[in-house]
Image 1: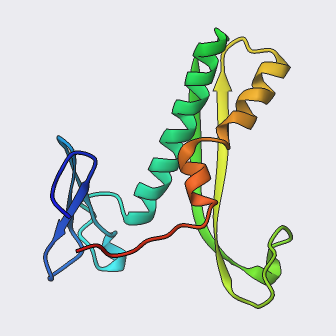
Image 2: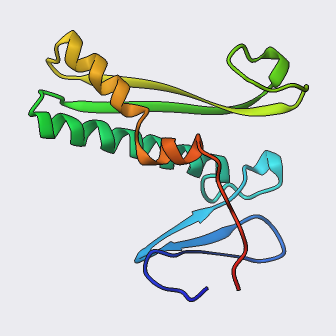
Amino acid sequence: MAETEGVVVVRGGAKGFVQEVTAGRHHLVADEPVASGGTDRGPGPYDLLLAALGSCMSMTIALYARRKQWPLDNVVIRLRHSRVYAKDCEDCVVRDDTRLDRIETAVELSGPLTAEQHGKLMEVAHKCPVHRTLTSQIDIHEVT
């Protein structure tokens, strides 16, 4: 795959976890915490995944509010990733005792919104493109 617009490039050495990430003209570093053998120079892969989801949710909420001309002032989204056993998950449809990834989100909206507007924005949050991607079947395959 050629390095072109729309392609994220990740480069890392064989000694350690530090990764240089390039997304278009943007550059960032990913790493693991010291406790996991990294140098903590940047967020870990799951932190980046949560950041992608939270950013998309926040952008989607704000876009919807702007289009409706609703009085939304700020959006704060807190996210946490964990793994749970399928047998402990009430909403899971899994037949064995596998572990499932769980992402918890807490959305805070500020501004003089009506209860109806607030409810609709909370509903819209979970319809953002990244949320839909993460909850769909994802086909990841190698290209040469």
